[in-house]
Length: 452
Image 1 (cartoon, rainbow, N blue to C red):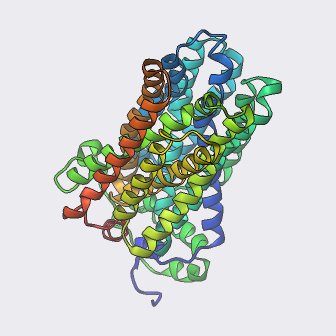
Image 2 (image 1 turned 60 degrees about the vertical axis):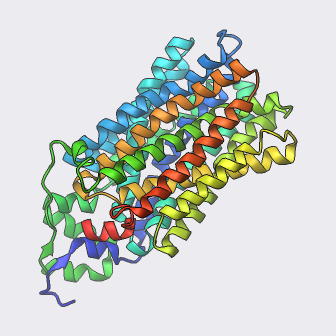
Image 3 (image 1 turned 30 degrees about the vertical axis):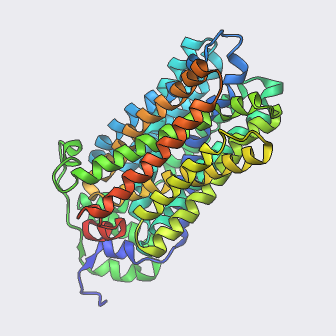
């Protein structure tokens, strides 16, 4: 391309090679989602220590996990309006400060069921920003040919590693220092927040949507240094997008409606499965005869396998050029893996089924996040991802609570496994149904190319 040619910003990002700045920003998003994953799953390791002293029934114990998700739902729904209007950077930093402050407050003031749940709600307000907005940010940065894979390395790796680390802290530190140590460790996000104030740039596509040309040129020159001279002289084609005051309603416009409702349904069912299972798996495995260390280790196993499963799912989606069929297959296999826990209670089945549930069910959720981000235009993308995760968090809130109630009513985990397995199968059918729809047949990568 000659220096006088008009440069399309979206194509420059889509055709880029992975540069050092790509890797740096991917690592930053991974660190953000590390603390999101860590903080999301550590209540699962609190249940064992407080259920007796606080006199909690199983349903109440489930609320220990769900309470943070209530805040997440609010944060995920509201943050997109802020991020689409004022930018990704300031919104991410705000969410991280909220998460860090209330994580630090939890071991100090969370000394009862009520105070713990209240602090978790406020922590969730910040968590509701981190995962959906990190997904949006990394999706807007990712080269087209690596859209799913790059996003998974930048988001899913951190989230899965954080959930795994919560299990490690639960196994090795809580017996000595109590459940509070989970939150002292989580407060290490505070130094990260300070550092990010100095090094986190704004999303290029958000800058393009606002027509901020000089900032775009500077950032593109760092993302594609081999073309820095071209950017200095050539005009940029940025297609500034109008700010939509009612961007939530735009998600339900005729062009998006079926895809939006299907994605919301799949997210609800997927997160019902994920949080219903992860919230109770340490306690249930202890009831099934596993040792304390092994029971807590099942939670870490799920997180490790979730990243491997998400990376595999994303790689297949990139190679096939379509995500729906892979997502449907992943949820179906995960659902059958959970159902296998009903007739068998031997260690090898426990290990294989729990690992498969992490690999397939949580792994598919990572790819659904990116599928959603690539399905919407830049000026509603953060809102689209946020609303998907917000609706999904209704399922996540109900998951641990319903799982606890089912155990209380039926005196064991059988009904819980049945509900979770069935929900995964229904999610598989829902996302698979998009194949017959004109919009549903539009591949996320094609949508990204069309909408920029």
